[in-house]
Structures are given as C-alpha cells and as structure tokens.
Image (cartoon, rainbow, N blue to C red; front, side, top):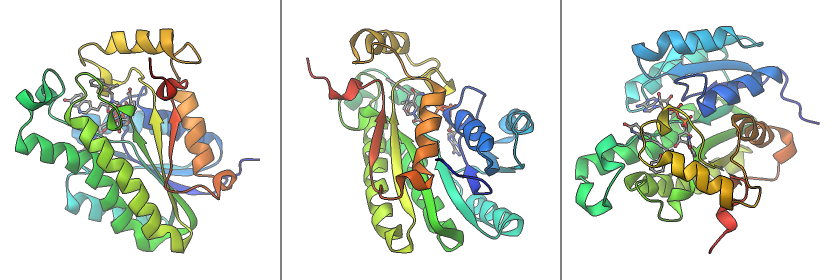
Length: 257
Ligand code: NAD
Ligand code: 0WE
C-alpha cells in the first residue's frame, strides 16, 4: 500500500484552492506528509496560508518567486534549517505573457516572451533540482505538471507548448542526472482543468467540452485524479519509474481523428 508517512515535501504553485498544487498538498497531507508550501508574491501569501491551515499535517509557508535565484536560495536555506532534508519536490508553476497565449503563434511571439515562458515554466524546475540536490534523500521523488500542447499543436497554447516540450526533456535529463542517487523525476500530463491559469484563456470552455465529448472516458479529469497519480509517483509504489510523462487526461492523448 501507499506509505508516505513522515516524508517531507516541498510544494510550489498554489494560487487558489483550485490550483493543482493545492489538491496535491491535500492528498499528501492526508497521507501523513509534512509540507512546505510556497507562494509567488505577497498578493498570494494569505491565500496559501489559509490553505495550509486547513491541512491535516505539519505545514510551513515560505515565499519563493521561481524566476529569482535569490528566492530559491532563501527557500533552500529555510528548508535546510527546518528539516535539513527533503523527500519530495512538486513543481506546479508555469507562466507566459498573456498576449502570447492567443492568436497566431508567429504573429504574437517575442524574444522576451519566449525567454520568460521557458524560464518560469521549465528552467525553474532545473533550478530546484540543482539547488536542493544535496539535501534530497535517497528514494526521493520530483514531479512536475505538463500539458499535451508540448506534443501537439493546441490552438492558442502557442509559446507554452515549446516551454512544456522543454520541461518534458528536462524531466528526462534530470532523471538521468539524479538517478545514481536513487532520486526519481517524472511529469504528469494533465487534461484541461479549470484553475486560475485557465481562467480568461479564450476558448477554454470549448476545450473542456471537446474532451468531454471525444475522450475515451467521455469526461474531464478531476483535481483528485491528478493528486492521486502524484501520490503514486512520489511513493515507493512507483520505485521503478523515472524520466516518464504519465497522462492523466481521460485517455484523450491516444486519439487521432
Ligand atoms: P494555477 O494558476 O493555480 O497555478 C499556477 C501557479 O504558477 C500559480 O500558483 C502561480 O503562482 C505559479 N507561478 C507562476 N509564475 C511563478 C513564479 N515566477 N514563481 C513562482 N510561482 C509562479 O494553475 P494550475 O492549473 O494549477 O497550474 C499548475 C501547473 O499545472 C502548471 O504547470 C500548468 O501548466 C499545469 N497544467 C495545468 C492544466 C490546466 O488545464 N489547468 C493542465 C495541464 C497542466
Ligand atoms: O499550462 C497551462 C496554462 C499556463 C499559463 C496560464 C496563463 C494565464 C495567465 C501560463 N501563463 C499564463 N499567463 C497569464 O497571464 N495550461 C495547461 C492551461 C491551458 O492554458 C491554455 C490552454 C490550456 C489547456 C491556453 C490556450 C489553450 C489551451
């Protein structure tokens, strides 16, 4: 059975109770995992604190803007003081300029926007692996969240598709890098789900409807289904799995026509 009791997890990417990372925090907490939750900026601090208070296990909250090496270093020092070790790192952050997430890819892309998307959505996972490497325990597990737009052209996903392709390659290279220490690295490719990152995306409602009509399971996925897969990936049940992208998408990715 799944046993995560007294494991220590760092969870990034909570912005609301709908966040995929908030669901992961709830599930890991229910399985006896001690948590550090991070928030991106002061605007999100109280929200993340409130989510932390509602959890069942020991939870600490620290700031971390993942675009800042200084913030990541401070977070490392905070966690090193608190625990001196960590078993689980969940990376659940992505960002691209809003104006580059719609319309024609080549019309709207810029050098700066390209860099920002790759920096926040892919390099930040590398940065966490690099900074925390020396305090991740034997048997540790890193997980990130990705989307099918890395593999196929999804209308309006645009630059985020390239950033997710980079993130998925990152999963493989980080798995190779950390494998000799018995630390595993995997990605969960989630189907569309209504979160802040999805709000205001033009056509998102149609994407949800399309998956409901066409996917093998004929429905959309839930926050809990993502969390349960992450719980599996950070537990010993998945001890032989590393460098993989696991689809939690009602089977949508297998379809052609
Ligand atoms: P969300 O808006 O709740 O979470 C996105 C998080 O990214 C926020 O907490 C935000 O604070 C964080 N973030 C952005 N820039 C940051 C920075 N500079 N420093 C620190 N944190 C930063 O939305 P979500 O849907 O829960 O997204 C989480 C992950 O899941 C993302 O990687 C997203 O690409 C991925 N994903 C989402 C969906 C979906 O349909 N919602 C599907 C597949 C994958
Ligand atoms: O990865 C994502 C979205 C990530 C995202 C969202 C935003 C909105 C606010 C990155 N950057 C920003 N920047 C903002 O200013 N998803 C998988 C959800 C998503 O976004 C889409 C999708 C899907 C699915 C955008 C277009 C088409 C489909």
